[in-house]
Length: 278
Image 1 (cartoon, one colour):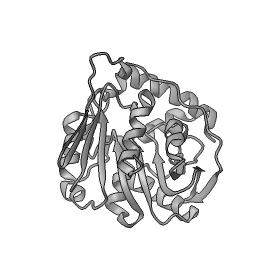
Image 2: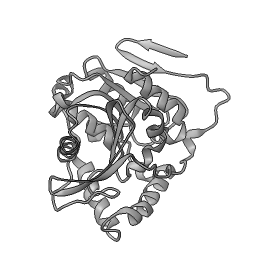
Image 3: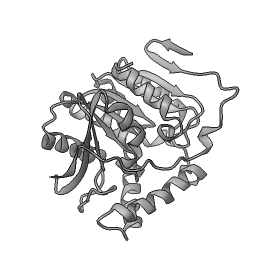
């Protein structure tokens, strides 16, 4: 059943017989051979990117510590309808980093730099966690470069994150997996701890947006989360949707901060519906 509560959209399903998907961290999808991939030299770093499919552009932005491989299930679903662009955020995956401190504004500027490199004037955004934050950052600071924003598992202030999230067993398993993937992909494979320390420093103070900044967003936004998110407080997700003008709220059942892996069919349907492909 889908219920529309304007301006909030809530997605719910009967769950009496549902499996406990939210208690499992499925494997990272295998890399998908891209029609075009490489590195964009911009903002003093090398940004890894890959492009799939044809149609209006959609850029997928992964979460903190992760890489573009995590979007494998979504690439397959979106590529028949869209030009799908994925990238590894600075210092993540195959992308390099420099001595600049991490910040969401800087990382959002990297997205714009890649768009310029690929000659993409405007793109829809699907973002997970840090990627969802980057989508909102783009909507605030680069409104002319983005269309629709599907922001999954994002926060707009540090108080929106649950205490001791890193001690959750699913999150802890993800952090350890991210270490192994970093060692495979990174140009600095022995510097995972230093990388995480620099990301932690950003997370301690960012994002810290005001109501006025959120209210300045003019892009269509769907604020999305799982009903068992280990990281983001439900009331904070609801606050974001209530504050951004005209935003929708979508709560996916029986999934967590890793819904796109746990229930890709439902997650992909939500994206395609929001983008107008369903």
